[in-house]
Length: 168
Image 1 (cartoon, helix red, strand yellow):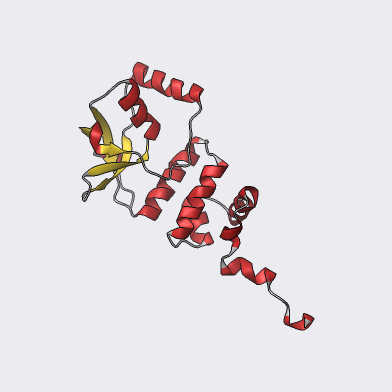
Image 2 (cartoon, rainbow, N blue to C red):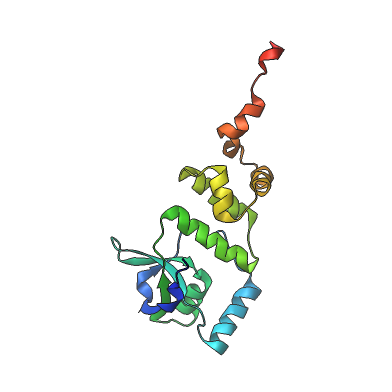
């Protein structure tokens, strides 16, 4: 069953919205300026996707950080449109990546940091690949490219480095 959080947007005080600490997406100055121009010309056409933390009474951005930043810093908006999703941290991180990748922009070093976080959250390589829309080969290449030796310490990789009993 597909949910439609887009059908329940609401305006919240901008002070109740905060960035997440794991977004592997950066926007070049030219795209940032274009987004600002788009908001100025067309208005806010998509709400910011958030997770609501009732203990902090804050909305954490899952997708739309740059829209949030422009509305806060460039236009000094007092309120921003948001929708909320109710997901655990692993699913929120995966959601952020899916939104980013669907737009075609991603940075390898920040993606590697996210992979490290997912491993610390207890995800296996298969779970990481599935959650982030990566093939197993993409995940291995990412680990190789950025030189994350510790990330190769999972049991599924360590077998290749063991001594063969027949070689004794």
